[in-house]
Length: 101
Image (cartoon, rainbow, N blue to C red; front, side):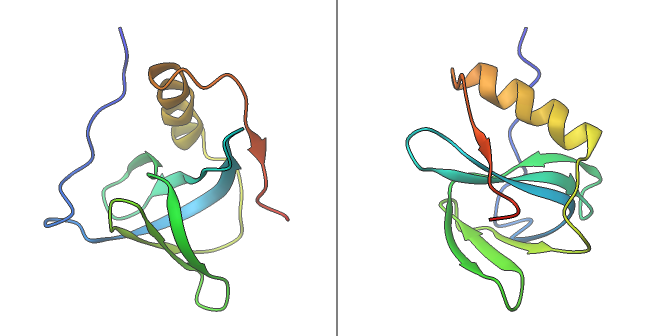
């Protein structure tokens, strides 16, 4: 049984504040935010990142949602749990943590 659930619609939550965040890169080059969704109080994996502004620490994803990265990067147990389920659901067998690059 997969424990990956659908995110709230963008019309309801167009922006999310993400703490204890990481950036994961897949073998195909897609990058995703992983961390703790402060806005909805849950672990979160974003859709593919399409834009990122390091000065403002804001990123936009393929879905159109904007993520505000707050605080230092870090590992969040709930975010890692969701990432693990997301990987299984999407049959991803490897990734690279590129947060510090």
